[in-house]
Structure formats: C-alpha cells, structure tokens
Length: 456
Image 1 (tube, rainbow, N blue to C red):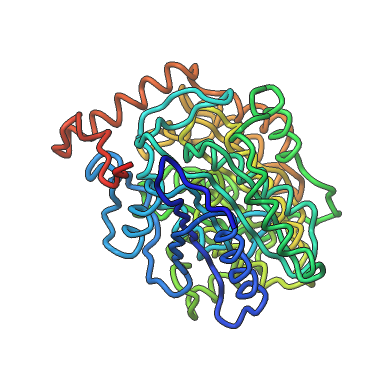
Image 2 (image 1 turned 180 degrees about the vertical axis):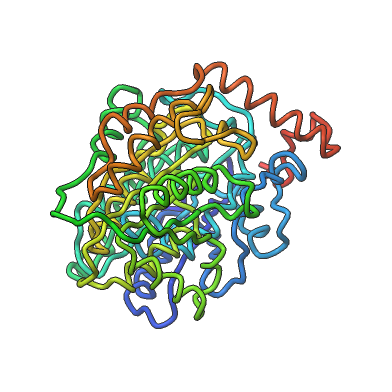
C-alpha cells in the first residue's frame, strides 16, 4: 500500500473525538476512521478523547490573543491539543451531531482553538476573518454521527465545517454525517471524506447570497396560535463574569422591556451548565417550563459556545416531545462586523427549536457585537450610535413577543445593519487589541507569536 509523504516527512493526523462511554456506534466509527486514516497515508495519528479529558471552557477573555499570545491561560489537556495541530496535516473532528453542530463536549475543545489564529482582522471570502498565526495549517475534516438520517442537520454540519475551515485557515475541508440506518456505507463514506477535500470557502464569495441565507434562517417559522406569554426564561450564553458581556447587556435589556409589559422573567447564565448535575438539570427544567425562551449568546467558532450548547441539549431533553406551547428566540452577536457570520449558528438554533418542540419566533443576529458594552445604554428609545439599531430592534421585538407574536421583520432588518463601515470596524478592533496588549504588558511583536510552530 502506498504511503503519501509531504517533503519526505511522514503525514500526521490529529483526531479530536467525543465518543461517549457506551456508544457502540461511535466507537465503531472511530475504529473505522483510524483504519481509513492509515490507508490514506497518515503514519502518525494522535487522538484526543474529550469525553475523558478534564477540559475547561472558553471564558471569552481573549488572553490567548493579548496576554499569552497563542496559548490559553487554562493549563489542561487543551494545551496538548493546540500544540499538536500546527504540526499536523489533517485535523479530524469526530462526534455526535447536536442540532446540526457539534455536541457541547466537543465544543469545549473547539472553542479554545482560537489561539491558533491572531486577533487581527483581514477580509477573506467576502467577509472579515482573523489573520493566520502559523504558516502551515492542516486540512479540516468533520465526521458526525446521528442515530437516524437527518438531511437538514447534515447540511448545517457541512456549512459549519466550511465556515470553520475559513476561520481556522484550513487549506481544504470536507465533512460527512453517518447514521445507524446505513451502517454498510460507513467505511466508503469516511474514505470519500478523506479523499474529496475541497478548498475552504470555495463558494462563499457573494455577500448578498450570504445575507439572503441569513434572512431565510432568521425569519420566523410557522407559528401556532399562542396566548400572550406569562413567563420568559432568558439565558446568557457568555461565560464572561456577570455584568461584563455583550450577551448579558442584551438579555437584561430584554428583561427590562418584557417585565414592563407584564411578562415575569427568570435570568439564567451559561455557567449554570458547566456540569451536568442537579443545578444544571433544575435550570434546564426552569427554562423548559417558560412560555418564552430567549437565548442571548456570543458566536464562538461559527456556532454556539460550549456551555450554551449544553444548556440547549438539556432543555431539549427536559421538554421531550410534549413540551408546553412556547416560543424560542435567539439573539446571537459576533465580534465580526458582519451579521452574516451568524448564519450557521442561527440555523443550529432553528434546528434546536424544531427538535425541542418550540415555535421558532425569529432570530436577532448582530454583527459588530463589540459595540454592546455595560456603559452604553440600551434603555427603550434612548439608543445612540453605535447601538441605536440594537435599541430599535429591541423596542420593536419585545412588544411583539409579549403579545405572543414573532420577531417583526422590521426588527430583523434593523439589527443586521452594521453600526460602522466594515473597514472602520476592523481598524478600531485591531487598535483595541493592541491597546489591551499594551495595558497587560505584552509586547506588540509578541501578538503574532507562534509557540507551537512546526519544525517543518
């Protein structure tokens, strides 16, 4: 059997897998993947099983960019994962599919890969992305599993793989979703995935098309006749300290408006879902019982953060197939200037609503989320630039939701308009990262450090 090599160096693969104990399907898939990787010429395969590793969750403080560039401040097995990737020729993400994205266990590892890129912005594939830190990056393969075939989730999973490949600077990418209904196709599908890589973002060069995709995903789905909600559960998806995140700013602004309209609100934080214990299950039941569920969350690596994903997994389980008549609205903000960056995360949120028996009442996707800070007022009718469009969207949405209706299209149109020109936003963001590095005593030249550079 032929062995492929790069410049005389044996090919290396890194597999980051989430194979829960007792999952015979995923265990079998992992074994088949290992064999196919070796057949493809990968002589070194390093596997990290995240379900058995004690990994911390991304806290969103960006220390890996401005304080210890290229390294996460949490000293655990993620350091080994991050160190292995720049020297690899392929990175394979293997695990169960959750609402079209990755499960919360796998997202813990994925969210903390951002140290592999720099904080600085550049324009690629029609949108803003972070500049590479390393000269070499591996191919990105995503291999998911579902008990039964689900074409919609498979499509979302592939779109997520493409978006992640662009942001993680992968030269090529591919994905596949396996199921237990077609076991006989597993080996051939994995082989095809490894052999048929395509350039990252090959078709993502039309921003207007991405805007249409976002609007299609964010607009409300079919609405059942719901009475005006009496209770609302608001979940802050950010893991930053309380009072410090853009997501909490948005959640509290919604809470203020809904309470004034007679809706009793309960505010939850993502940190309630660090562990799957009694407190997390109780929080999930509390959310599942509310008439309205509003998720305010940041965008982490093109989808929802690990803790927010865990919350949705537990809420879906708590609701089962016979949940009360309720509505779900995600408010998703990202640090890139374009709201289009949230398009895949909105589709994941929409899939959650369908699987958890919620009416998807529309989404509010926000680009340039860095404009939401605790010192900027989101009081009704008082928004000034650069948050005026957010205030308008909140002022239009809260009364509609309080009456049992969906997010008005006028609110969606308002929030997707960027507060600043993209070029200006990128410049301000870059200067902001440089200023924060200086404040923390980090030399400017260190911001592009390559602590895990491959000798190749």
